[in-house]
Image (cartoon, rainbow, N blue to C red; front, side, top):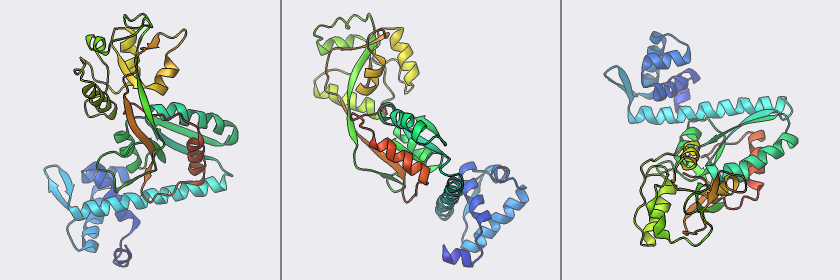
Length: 313
């Protein structure tokens, strides 16, 4: 970076490279930066002069970055994120601890760790606001890399090992089977696992961690794959479907415990299939430094005694 700075690399160049990586078109990148396209073209030419190599190539109406351009764009995004976080930290210090924190989580930890921490933070950190995104780990990883969240509870998404850091495992999660109250199998007696195959199962797609864990366990038990006419990662759609049909939903036990029970339209089937999803941990951008407010809220989340929670990745 020192050599590039000596050759005249400026923040405006880094902003352009980051915008190009996201937009894929010079005109769109210029719009994002609030400059005219000719000005963006001049900045791009300056970047290539400074780098001494081509950083882009035109493809139809768009632009594709060369490997050198992609490398510079990745670093540019990190620099811009760090500068943005530095500004946030300065505002937090000037504001006496006020700030906004963006948290990501898979479903189980969102209920067992994030939610209790936010309840505590309302009293301990009254000037802090928070935004929570509940999603599968791959989407959380993308959001982290884009700088749209400070930290997340999840698992390492494939292909992001060099860009994200995962803490030591926090906890694994047993999976329970939830159905509507009044379901034929919800009679409280013993269930033969083969009976479960008479009903549709609602799970995410085949690439999802929860689905893989379910299928692997059923194979280990010598059971066939269950019918699955609908694949969805939407928790709300899953709840609606099992409430209005005889479908079975394998979900994190922590989630089932909160939505099934006396007076609830849902019940947990009295059968333990031994399905367990691998442990989750704390996901952060590699090398990133949390702002003081984000670090404090992260500590509060990690201090929660989650009972080995997991999300339906």
